[in-house]
Length: 105
Image 1 (tube, rainbow, N blue to C red):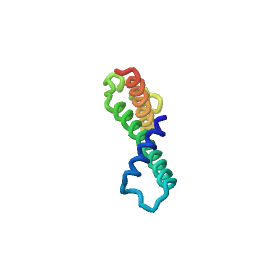
Image 2 (cartoon, rainbow, N blue to C red; image 1 turned 45 degrees about the horizontal axis):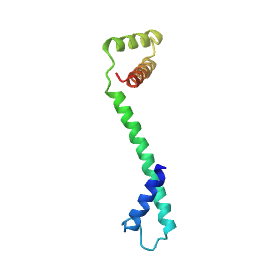
Image 3 (spheres, rainbow, N blue to C red; image 1 turned 180 degrees about the horizontal axis):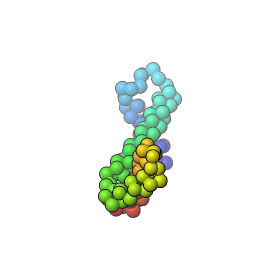
Image 4 (tube, rainbow, N blue to C red; image 1 turned 90 degrees about the horizontal axis):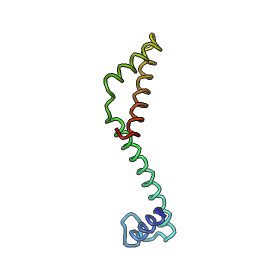
């Protein structure tokens, strides 16, 4: 189990004199602190992975012809509502990019 290995490594690091833990803390307190730190790091890793996926998607350029069709459709569906047109365009571009990132194009 990955988390167990990380926690074991972290415990070993603390026993080696890690400065974040005071000398008066018990082993149980050290383990609890390490488990909290591991959970925080795993959460941060998940955030970084989501950000990386979003960046990859953002790097893909939508072809001009596709963008023109998306804009035309939004304008014809909502001719008097620019904010809704803008929202529709953003959602359609996001969907197009998600499809093409999944395909690896």
